[in-house]
Amino acid sequence: MPLQNRVDPFGEIHAVAARGLFTGNRGVIHDPATRTLTGRRWTTQAWIICACDYKGRRREVMGRNAPAGGAGWTELFFLDDVTALAAGHRPCFTCRREAAKEYAAAFGRAFGIAKPRAPDIDARLHGERRVSGRPPIALDRKALAALPDGAMVSQGQRAFAKHGEALKAWSFSGWSDAGDHRDLALEHVRLVTPPTTIEVLQQGYSPVWHESAAGRPLSP
Image (cartoon, rainbow, N blue to C red; front, side):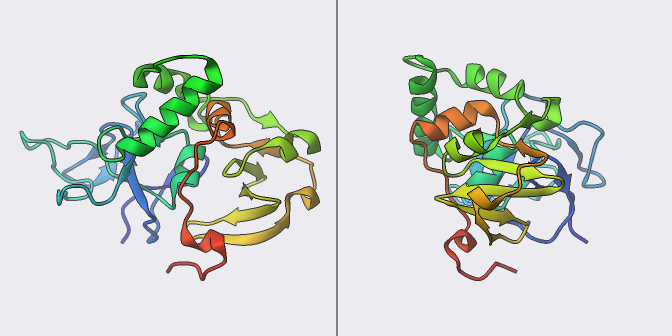
C-alpha cells in the first residue's frame, strides 16, 4: 500500500503509487513507528524541492532517518518542478544548488533584492501557499494569457499548467494535452502557483518538466 507522501499542485498530500522526479520536505510531519502522517502538514516554512539521488545517500522513506534514531525529515514526492513550485516549494540549496541559486537570482531581480536570503524567500512563499490559507486568486483572460510557462491554474478540482500557448492537464502520472489556454472557459479559473513564484518564472527561472509534457507517454 502506498505511503501518504505524494504532493499535488495544491499542496495536499496523498497516498498514490506514482513517485515523480523530485523529493523534498516541509520538516518532520510523520510518525516513524507507523510511517503515517501526523496531523501537521509542515513544521518549517522552508519547503524545499530535492533531488531523489544525492551523493549515494539512502533513507527509509517515512522511517527513522535522524542520526539519533528519530524521524528526520518527512520525504515528500512531486511529479516535477512545475508541480512542486505550484504547491509552494522552492529548490534546495544543498542537493539542487544551481537551481536554488537561479531561483534566488530571479527572486532578487523580481523584487529588487541584491542578495536574497532563503528565510526571506520562504517567509514570503508561506503567506501565499494554498494549504497555509492563501485566498483563491481569480484570473481573467488577460491575466491568464500573461502567465509565464510553468504557471499552474485550476478550474474546480482540475489543475493545468501553461506550456507555450498550450495548457497541460496535470495528474500524478504526468501531463496530457488540454488544448490552447485561450480556449479555457474562464468561469472559476484560479491561480495555483504562488504569486512570488510567478514573478520568479517571469524573470527567467526554468523549471524541470516531467517528460510527458513533451508529448511522450505518461509514466506508470
